[in-house]
Amino acid sequence: MKPHPVHRLPAPLEAAVQTLKLAARGAVERTIESLGLAALAATNVFQRDGLLGAQFELNRKSAVFVLTFNDAFDERVTRELGPRGGAPPARAAAWDALTLVEDREVELQISAERFGLETAHKCEWELRELDAYVGALLDASAGESVRNPLRPEVVGDAMIRAVDAVSERPDVRKVLGAEIGRSLADALPAAYGEIVADLRGAGVQPLSLAVRQRAARADGSGVATDFDTLGRPLDPPGSAAHAGPASGLGGYAPSRAGRGAPASGYGPGLRGSGAGRGGGTPIGSVD
Image 1 (tube, helix red, strand yellow):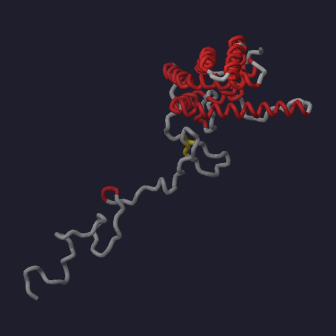
Image 2: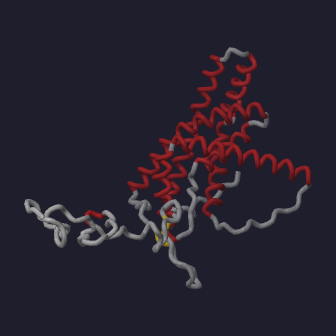
Image 3: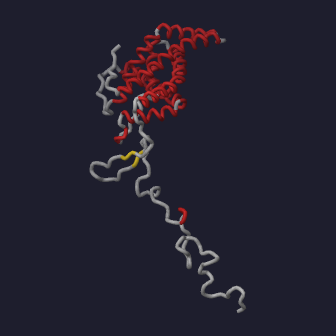
């Protein structure tokens, strides 16, 4: 298999990629054991035969799985960090072969996205911290949004391609994809936590949740807009959210000023106010 260059990544990201590869290798070892236990507990003969067949294939080709996962993961990470320009056109192929390849690629993409969504719920907080550190490493403060190349979707894509390399039987692929995916999803929160701890120990400063300023356009038109670390625009200057509250005592808006109203915005009191001045009969006097 052709090794893909990982030396273009920053050194902390190389260590993070290696951590995820070790997590995938551990998931394979746990899957081999879990398939045997599941086969012993199966009550259906066909189900037991399917689990034992999947265990046999994975145990026999575990090295192939690991190598394929490493190559596919390196290739996907490199593609995620590469320029976002258009890819060169591929050479022409037969219509039937092109349809089969496209169908399989669509299935792989859908399965990887499903794995990413299901796993993201288990490691939501770890991914939030990891996004901040990866954004700092990839200089996401320049205004262009940078997606995390270590997100679960990328890991799932490499895992599914590695499962395809283990066996060509659809039933075995289905069992291996489900079991390895479950084991890997359980291992990713700890792996992401370890990566965050390593990045913190290496002195990487994460992107804070403070406001990042996006530069104005080159023609000078428009107003610079504030964005948070997730790329969501905040309220621009001059909007209603930036307008301060009306001046009043204690931060409250003053009431509608009437005749004889004091400068504080509150109505006149009973004593010392100008309400009794002018007309009226004083207390204790007879008109």
